[in-house]
Image (tube, helix red, strand yellow):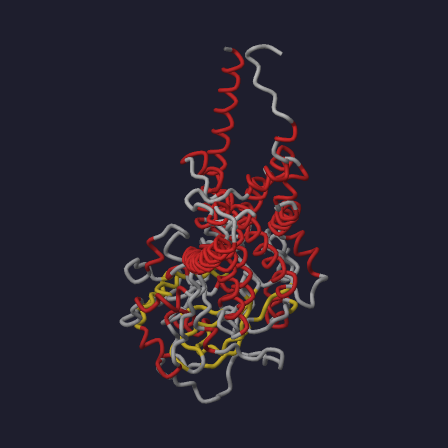
Length: 209
Length: 367
């Protein structure tokens, strides 16, 4: 008899993240269906999904640097869900492009992609997200082994760089918004590089002594 | 076995791996003394169950509350950091003063009639989906912020290579030229389009009045420069004021008009009040808004978007499905209100009227 079964005190977290995370998407869908997205609803929906995907990806990427800098650990529980939410919005973004923007004109897709390399960059980012989404479960971490899993998931920084590039290249003129996101990514990446270098130096020192 | 070695533990006493893992993954609560294990017996069994149920109910309510609060905070936060895409209500047509259209006299201009696939874009879309960086970068910004523009009093100076330069008061301009309705396709360089019933008069009519000299090879247009009225001019996104230009034969073409209204009413500020250029066979950015100066010049004038990115935006900027923007295709467009894209037409469908202006020119070089 194990007595009162202690439930995970953070069981609410995934619910909060998924319900809250899908809320902007649900609002977007509702506004799209009721004709409340303005004169060009497809462009609105496309941009909104892409923006949410990038913001969620940056939040996901912030988890580890927050631990490195402040020693916080609670946010690590959110990391997987933030990543999967980013993937969900990236998929929605892609679906709106292919399913609505190019509706009935799929033949134009190859030419459009060739003309607009930023589409290819975005598509590559989405493709690279797939293996990470598939291996996001704890079970997969065990199956792959932490070392290999970590190495695979460090791809997320490549994805971040691709996503920001996609964002910068699509701008007509003003890249302020894309640059802000890029700067945040650079800081997050910088913290990790700094940490890695520092740890390597420490290891080397220990080995010498 | 040495003296300092730890005592051997019989293997029967070693915790089973599964049990260890289960406990590691699911540690018992530190605070609660497990009421079930202290005393076995029917009474303690009831007490145990009572505690268990009470605790699970309490923890369920607590978890539900946390999930709800967390979802609201996270969802609300996401909505707050993503751009608010609140819709700006379109101005009521009745709020715009009606303009008198000249009785249908024989117009000097052969205006092509649009077909059934070109229904007019609703006023609400025409007035809330605009590129007018003087009032902000998003499409809804002009409708929201253009109220700060004062369109009266307003003068337009016609100057440069002409015999009779003159500063026109806007009221004078409105009286001097009979207003015609021109329903034109408008193709934005961003690959969307509209059909807009403009009210205006041929640019040629105005230019003829000032009598251009033989040295007038080009026409240069300038938008108002006043960051107080046009807050977007406080930013450095473009070089202000906005400037545009046409070759003189383009400017004299009967399809090129100066518009002062749309849908039978005064031009809303966000559409370029009080007077703007409309050149339907060119990309929308050529249609300079809120004009204060028109100069006849000898040299090809500087134009804003060309100056900002010459590789992407040419001086001519003729609508051309065969010459792509370096970063996107111009072969198709989305008509505002349509779900499917449609092919873009050469010279925006006005090839019959304007193609001769460019005969012998390489349109890939002079894009």
